[in-house]
Image 1 (cartoon, rainbow, N blue to C red):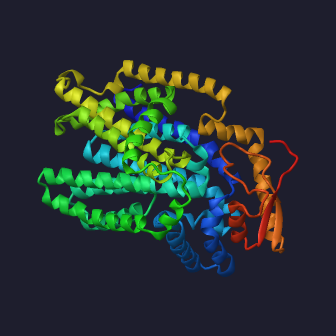
Image 2: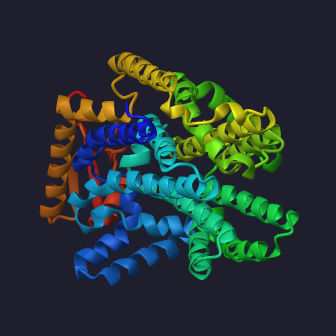
Amino acid sequence: MKKGNAGAKISIFLVVLFLAGLIPVLLLGRYDYPCADDFGFSAYSHIAWEETRSVYQVLKGACHTVAERWIGWQGTFSSIFVMALQPAIWGEGAYCLVPWIMIGSMCASTLFLLSVLFLRIIRAPKSVFVSVSMIYLIFALQCMIDKTQGFFWFNGAAHYMVPHSVALVLIGVLFLLVTEESRRPFRLILSCFLAVFVGGSNYITALLAAVLFAGGLFALLAGRKKKESALLALPFFFFLAAFALNVLAPGNAVRQETMTYRPGIVKSILLSFYYCVEYVSETWFDWTYLLFVLALLPFLWEAVKAADSRFSYPCPLLVLAGSYCLLSAMFTPSLFATGIAGGGRIFNIIFLDFLLLIIANLFYGMGWLYRHGHLSESSRGSCLERRNTQLYLGGILLLAGFIGILYTAVNPDFFTSASACHSLLTGEAAAYGREGEQRTLTLRKDEGDSISLERFATHPYLLFFSDIEESPDDWKNRAMAKYYQKNYISGIVTDITE
């Protein structure tokens, strides 16, 4: 390998590796179909498009959904607006765009935030930024906690993955706002708009944003940076206004009446610390996390050297403790509202933020060691150019491939790409697609007010989330009936085994 090009070649290889894993996942999207809340939250928008073919009327229908749900079910107005615009309202075939939208938003927001941190704040080489980003995205794509709700079910992903992505962009814009003087008016307006969206989204993302806003403002005031504090205060105000509108919605009280157990504020907070440890160290932790950390080390070391004397890295244990508190806080809203730690879609964004916190703490800890261990003199030159480092990274790649093959052989759904390939190669994805297409044709052609549909006989791991029930009174059946303007829709159980 030619000297001076190793970092660039490694980053290019990681990009190719990520894109290769992405191909089967995106190909699988062609067989994706809406289900459950996809219908209930987008019924008005869909009917508006069917009757008028007017985008304005569709947006009006989405606003009507927001108002109705805000009063009668939940206050998360920005999430609901996005839910009401699920792709299938324009035609069922457009639902194939869901994994493109969700993975695209995850990738774009992550790349933006990490570019701000690594290229503008730390001033690391581009190859380091690309490599760290790709390692993160490969791990996030392949090991997502609930892959279906993260990438293939629009409603669940729109409520969590999209606000998470917007929050990452907001953090990046705020960093630029307080550290650079150029384009401040534009960044200030953009940050206010993004803050309103995050404040009106799910409570996990909104609570995390509130903590980060308060922490950032406190840090700026403690550092006597009055101008920067004033800049941050304006989007914080817009966020608080949107968050208040979200929390004080009458629909929240209606929804809470359906919950049988609520532990209260103090107990919810204590349980949050407990569940954070349980899920991070026991439920989720496996060999993949170890490889994730080991793969990051050489690149973060280069980032630390690039930062050099511009950071002092005080109190690394305090940063670690703060990260634990921050991650624990993400469990609190679900525990307070429902008494449980959360479901797959909630765990998805906790998982993504956990990965970011791993990167942050590794960088900070290595920076402290570099600065206070006086290693600057012995760390000249890029470690990525050294043969030992290249052999180290190659060994990690071989180990990951070997163990990955073993796990995939036992469980084809362990990795997202492997699961997508399995569904495509076995034909179950195509079979599920045919069932979805037949169901759509029946709904479109049958002009009766009552209709019976065969329930899905094929359940691909990534594509299938939920289905209608036999009873037309089930909420999923009623949601689909409203969407297609039918009086009743009932499910028929077929004799085909799964």
